[in-house]
Image (cartoon, rainbow, N blue to C red; front, side, top):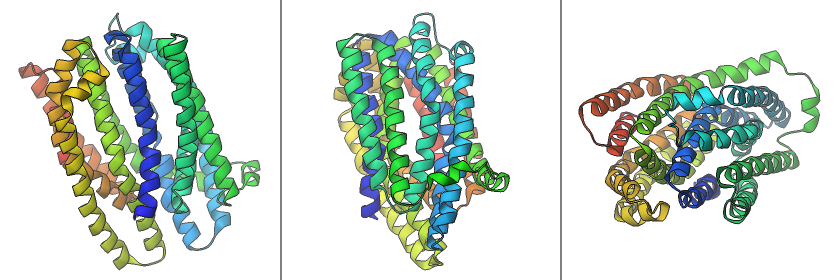
Length: 410
């Protein structure tokens, strides 16, 4: 478990850790720029994770092919994923560039935030193909029971990201323009590095890309991903609506939401290291017909996930005020963040269990259950958001009551 989970933890934590440092840099430039980073980042975090099925579907398919010792089939599956991700990534990039203004207005960007958010999103969209290539390559590497290669590739990209952030934001004073350029460059560095490594390991052979896409394999890929797409769309629709509500509550609330979202994302990804190990190992054991071993593994990982979630929640609660002050010097932003962070801390334990369960069902390829379950879990969360926002004036607490409802439902 830990041989897979520890490197996976590193690869999952590095990027949001760098984004957290980036948010601190931008936050020092003022609440408007931090709010713009929150809205622009939310648009991106909705657009790109919708296609997380490129990773989730690739992992069990490659794991099962390798369990049958069929490396040629594994390479063909990866090549089809790269073909599909290139087409989808290019289309996504074009859509974000064309409809940038409408998207930001729909998200509730006010006149103060809009120009900064637009500049960030227009540049950030250029990373779309690279982000999807990285998802396919990560899925293939996890299916090969290799979590070190993604760690090395993402660490290289994140180092580039951090250096360019320091240079462009703090040195050249390019604020959000510099932040967006840094992200784009780092994503291409990470994705191309990981593609090279899986070619070196024999999981992916470049010659398979010379053949035209195979409609049968593409359909297999899309069938595996369609239910995951429902899951991701359901979840991201909820978070988009939640961010939109926050934007309409004022600059201080949406800026504080950026702080709470960074903390929650960072802690979630720490537990996701265990979820990655769960997915890879469950897929391998089921591919080998070892169902009892897979069952014992799941019980152990749920226990470990519960401990991790409880400890992370306690640390966040104890450090809520210093964390808020680290992100912003604006007292209204600090007040909103400090008021909501105890609630964010309280849901870390159920969130950890939900992530482990996700890994179990992904490894077992029960994508349909995950899609249907997530759709129905967003209903009470959306109801909580609308009801609380309409009848109470709780600021950022409103958003995280709704988010908590989603996590507990999951």
